[in-house]
Image (cartoon, rainbow, N blue to C red; front, side, top):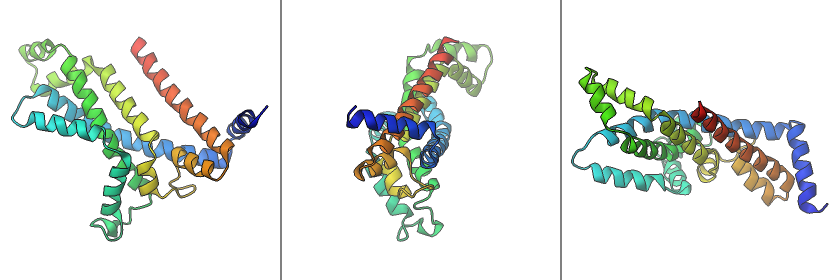
Length: 228
């Protein structure tokens, strides 16, 4: 069957047999990425909404900064946070480096600009009469903004899913801040890189299949919500 075919069979066997290393690695990825995207959504959605609804001096500068942060390389984020969290850094005494929490912090930094930017795009593309109508009917600015969020909820969901896709598939932050510690901070992406370099191609392939499956399920979930 060939090398690739044999590796695929072994990969599916590992998945179907619920291999412990596979399970633990997938769990770490899902846990850290889910925590990060929840925090990123709590930060990014209000930021995107605020920038979309308000016009003020310096707004263009903030938009340029947000666009720059959206394309920020993961290794740069990992490097900066490594300096903050290392023993010699200002946050070193907290002992966060090489822990899941450090990875969550790094992934939140990566996801927040993406969520904020896509929510901003959704707000900008929405019918501005929604806000005006709500205000005319006696709603407060906050109530009007909440009503707008309801109208663009699918855009907000897409923003959150895009942020989730960014963090679950990244390598740099997870490797630099997590340390790729087995059963603790090893994610699917870092394990794929490590195991493949060791010659464990089937193991890396199994994790790659799981990673693609998660991405597919998340997008199917969004499509189901949109159809409803």
